[in-house]
Amino acid sequence: MTRLWLIFAQTTTVCLAVLFVVSTLKPEWLPAKGAGEIVQVLQSTPAPAAIPAQPGARTDSYHEAVMRAMPSVVGIVTSKEVRAPRHPLFSDPALRRFFGDRFGDEAQRATSLGSGVIVSPAGYILTNNHVVEAAEEIEVAIPDGRKLLAKVVGNDPDTDLAVLRVQGENLRAISFGASESLRVGDVVLAIGNPFGFGQTVTSGIVSALGRSGLGINTFENFIQTDAAINPGNSGGALVDALGNLVGINTAIFSQSGGSMGIGFAMPVSTAKMVLEQIIRSGAVTRGWIGVELQPLTPALAESFKLAAPEGAIIGGVLRNGPADKAGARPGDLLLAIDGRPVANPQGVMDVVAGMEPGRSATLRVSRRGELVELAITIGRRPKPQSRVE
Image 1 (tube, one colour):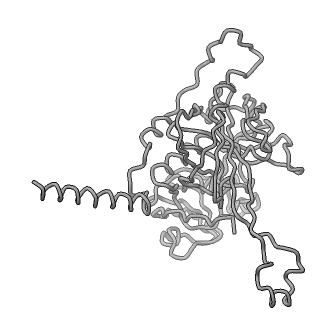
Image 2 (tube, rainbow, N blue to C red; image 1 turned 90 degrees about the horizontal axis):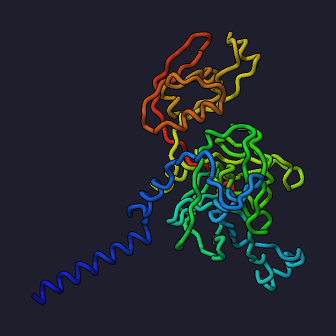
Image 3 (cartoon, rainbow, N blue to C red; image 1 turned 90 degrees about the vertical axis):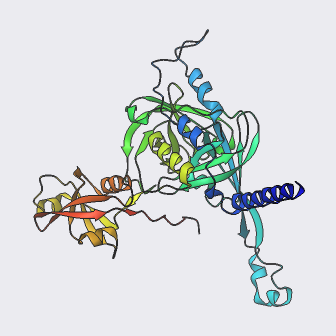
């Protein structure tokens, strides 16, 4: 009996040791905690026709919507160490010869501010990648006054989104709206932490939908709004008049650094896709065909004898990439992918990115006036390099 007990104790000790090593060095090998919960939370729930009127509620106020969303919007403070050069005098070779590097660059802590949105009671938070990129420490300020340390679960530089996680109880997740149902002119509210003031709400309307070609992200499908968005609002919530999340505030157009009435938010449909993939696998996987694309101008469309300038010119083909193996050539005009017409280079990227790597597809190209069908195997889009040196 004693021998069996010793064997059991030793086996238990070994298993616990293995679990500790795996959880420390390879946490991705373990089942994702809260994955089932987050998928359930992310199921889009249709917004009710109206919020039930509360006693004393006013029809000229968005107070109920704000109270519904504000507890889910957090402030984010990041910090990292930077090397600040000392006075140029201490760079003199003679001084360095005698004193060494004791008068060299000085280490300082640099902090920056941003916002985030709690999307699950399990502690998952959506924000912008540029808010937390290269941060060594991330502190999240919960609206109830708590300050929690956060870790980056994963990021997606192509959409400038990142997912954080904090350990805490009674975290209130925001309700998701449907960005696809937004219309130009709909009322929206921006909630965030501008200039470190703390939670601030601004209102406006949807000024435009599907904004792209701004050079902000690789994949752009922005909601444009005139709700005031200022530095520190990045990663905060854009909600509808019922308090449902419809976008993640990402960028502004400004010549002064402050709001000029033109802000951009990533639609919640894109944010949900990124969120789900990061929680499941720690990264976002997109399709890729390995081509460099150029827009089709009206003059080029006339040379291709096209009625309208639709499609994208293949300006370059990566050697041994998917398109190269399929037989694509520089100068081909890409018109459709799997029967889906593409209007411009951004349209090509959006269609291909949504395809699963490894699947087969067909490219329809115009080559010297003739239509050619090319069979291609979709590849995996390479991870973009960090913008931080």
